[in-house]
Length: 303
Picture 1 (spheres, rainbow, N blue to C red):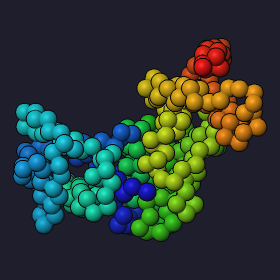
Picture 2: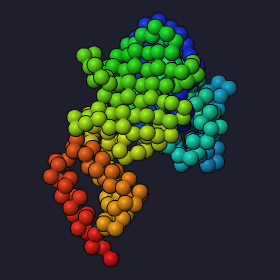
Picture 3: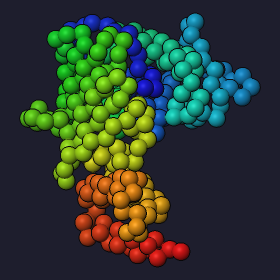
Picture 4: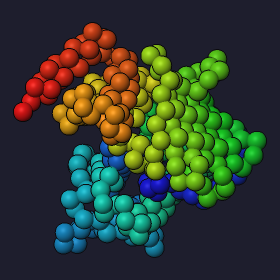
């Protein structure tokens, strides 16, 4: 799994309503891998220096040099907004992410310290996971009876259960509930080895997806759509992406009867049916059937 600011160190504290990382000017990573810093009095805590084609960030003894093309600077009166595009190959290289992670953790820790607040890394891991899943709200309050399990209330009324395998682990199991009255989680993610089993409870049915990493899940058009359906966020972009994905399958699918017993063709038919069922969460069934009929008519007669 991509580290993506996982802040592995564990700090045991009692029930807390400590300040969130967003309150000190850190947002993300979002679904597109973007992280934003709001820096008041730029250079006072986290120093930024341009060196050739790189932006160099320094805090204390920690530093990280990042190519300018992955950093966007927006200057406002009294502060800067610094955006990092972490969904790139440069950030996916472990030694680059390690140095970036060290700088970010040092920055956040210093801000918490200046505000007289404890920096609970388990809570912050939960906030990072919420960001990744597209939930903008933070953990409002939490408790844990063991060092490896966190039960949290989110500021939008949702509830989160997070289980670790060990103190250096980001999570082994994640369960999201609509509210305190919910019996079943509407999103659950379980890790077994290096595989992630993702389950979604939607108005039109329950669906399961399996991936080799969280980043793979976040890039998959089916998961992105199902996350939006479950969370209730803006559906149009992910719906468009999933429809485009379905159209590509239509285009390269073999529509002739002679290939009905071909294993690849069988899997494609299953996937087409599955995606069509999933899309019923936001598109009327008759429109989906019409898309299928149009595609079959178009590609079956294609020379």
